Length: 383
Image (tube, rainbow, N blue to C red; front, top):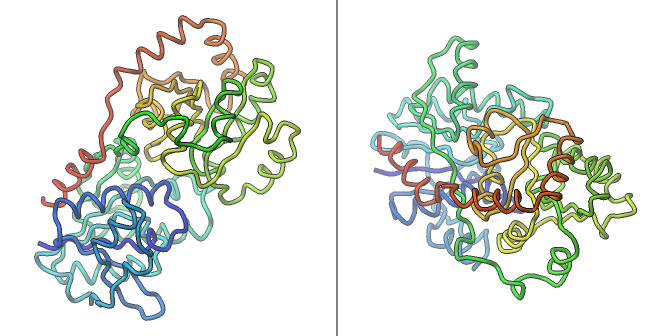
């Protein structure tokens, strides 16, 4: 049985983060377990045709960082007529951004007898469109509408997303496909502690300067980096803390970026890094006093898991999905309450024994590996 996966958004992306990283991790492991039964697709919008991606070159590029990305795309065209009975179409990537619209594609595949499985990371474009690009919202409406109508199974990463999908299905008066909760994996750079000599001098200097609060992830309105910046000005600085943002600047953050760079402490006690590799990010996790996670809404929240699995105490805005993912292992504060965030940091600053106990407690945190995540998804795919 062939499993077809459209990875066009990943192969066109200039950097691998968020959904692109999930797509990479799962696709690589599916290739390792299912070999040539996995057919990776790249959509050529100019020719309106799918081309097959060479599985070996895909893994070489995304795992071993060898080769040239465009060279993984073969000259072998995959006609839609090939994806029929005894085939599975697995929408794993951020496919709503692909120019092959699912409202066109899925009914064709369904008519041909293909089984359709969708990985729905979240429906934030529906529930919180104010945090999304307008074009992305329109694209997502097409994507989610098509999958609610044609998908046989839906994979989500948290029960909170199932609850939102149920509400949407009721509002649209459609039957919700069978949903399966599969938590995301979090074992990137699993080979152990990153040593000082494995990172740049700049990173070594920053982690040894003062204790710091770390935020990891694309800088966009939904992630609420502004809260940590305000907390720095409201008390974290006076407590002797620096702040470090690790992530690309996303959409609609021009004012924040300007304000951040205009602050007199920028590149002195306020730091921003874009494009760091897994090793460098792990190093920042290892040495952070706290990871801050301030999102207004999430589909899962990988940084929560990545911080805890590295023994970094996490202070997080109290939202349902984060509670589900991290439970009692996080220190919770009310959303948009910068003073409460400062109070938490101050408490542990003044009570080092409590901080040590918190670090010990985190050692009991159990997380899902990417291998386990892939196995759970594969079980869904195989029915």
